Amino acid sequence: MKTFIKVTEIWIPDQERTRLVFGNGLYGALTDFKAASEQQHFSYDEGLPGKAWAAGHPIVLTRFEQSYFKRTIAAQQAGLTCGIALPIFSGDFLLAVVVFLCGDDEDHAGAIEVWGNDPVSGDSLHVIDGYYGTLEHFGNVSRQVTMPKGQGIPGVAWAMGMPVLTEDIGRVSEYVRSVDAQQASITTVLGIPIINSCEQIYVMTFLSARATPIAKRIQIWTPDRQGKQLVCRQGYSKNNNNLAEIFETMTVNKGVGALGRVWLTGMPVITGNREASEYNADLDNLSSMLAIPVIGRGRLKAIVTFLF
Amino acid sequence: MFDKYRFECYTVSALTNLPTFQIDERTCLLPIIRNMLNVLLVESDINNAVLENALKSDGFDILKTQYSPLFLTLTKQSRPDVIVFNLDTPTENLIIDLHKLNQQCPKPVIMFAGDSSSETIDRVIKAEVSAFIVDGLSGRRVNTIVQIAIARFKQRQALKDALEEARTQLEDRKQIDRAKSILIKTRGFTEHEAYHTLRKLAMDRNITLGEMARNVIAIAELLK
Image (cartoon, rainbow over all chains, first blue to last red; front, top):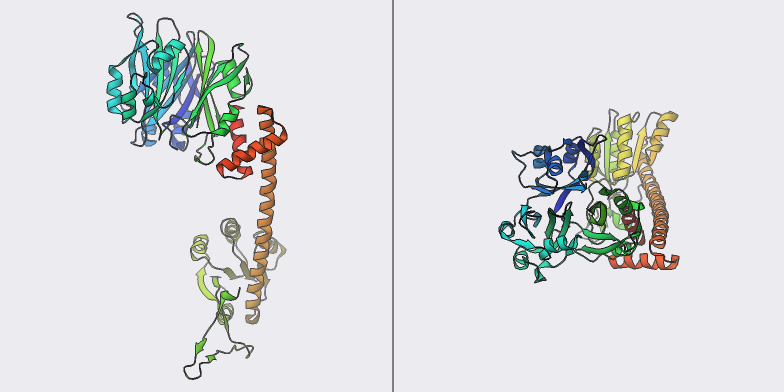
């Protein structure tokens, strides 16, 4: 199974917290690009992670050539054409930057968008940045749409202040772009809100086709009502995975295991086999995981996991 | 086994409808039975006439080559039934190649050599040479030596396979126990329930319990 995202990285502040250093990464077979990345570091406003830190919101870079991207040659050699950086803040202070890198071949249909509101004029979101790959028409439609609070995946994520995962988006009539999504073969949408202030809202959306899902499985974990344990609220993969479902019935205590550590520290984590692994559809094997905290007003609202 | 052999010169007389036999020079009794076995004869500076003639008269198909860095590639391509060396002493490179051969595509290896030092014998045994004959090259014995070497090789391979299977079973057993204990811990299953869950997951995927156990462990590792 091909997944839409080819590379995932976590960049973390160094000891003095003045620049970003390599934290962890999933590179699959792209070992040369991995080698080129591990020694990198980024100052504030430098490179893709540094720019996201300075911007204070997710950014999408759809073209590496003649841009601020620092690993252009290595990325070109690895067939990577687009980068998305998601900064994770607690208040004003950066905890980490998660970078996703995607390819641009025709086999990979999907899109990643950053929606934002105009803090002055009001309550609707519009695309401020987007990567659509081969889905040019869908990109054009999306750039013209505005999404009021509570409508569409970005609007719902904003209203709830929680990540939203929707399968079979083409069949959901309430979804503002359902017809266009269906035409573009988009089936699944994940919306992650980034709410650092009452006025400025951002929502990051991951849209993917059935043939090239965002990840092999996506889960949303949230603290229970007592705030004592994490429970899995939603799990989705292209194929049913009864093994993953078994693990989604368990609860997680703060500080225990990878998800417990994300809750304890507010830091994203990558676990599992970081080397290339062939996906075996019969086994439904999941060999690595990226877990991203969704933080609102200094508290953990949810954890989104991408299982590869 | 019999179909591995065919009679050489087993032609039918047009007049009598009876077979005519080429008589074996040594026994003068039996027809030459041509071995359907392919021999890769790896030559060195030593005169191979006796060995080559013996192999030919015993009906082996011979492919001759000089030992070179391409030995492994040639062996894989030519796929001989048996490899025969005639040399004074095996070089270090040859021993390394034989170790690789054992790992990649094991074959019966017979070595006629002049060096009888204990060090050489030790290296050759470690390289799993099937027969090592020092100063014992006699045309009459070659066929027997080859047949015994092949039999010994097959026996050794059967033992290695059995050992590997036992190791796999033992490893599977450990992994299954570990996967069960993960399921017991995460789901509060009894041991019986954990085993049946594991078995159902394996059946759903049409894979072995061992493979399924490794899959369960891998997911648990992600959450660790």
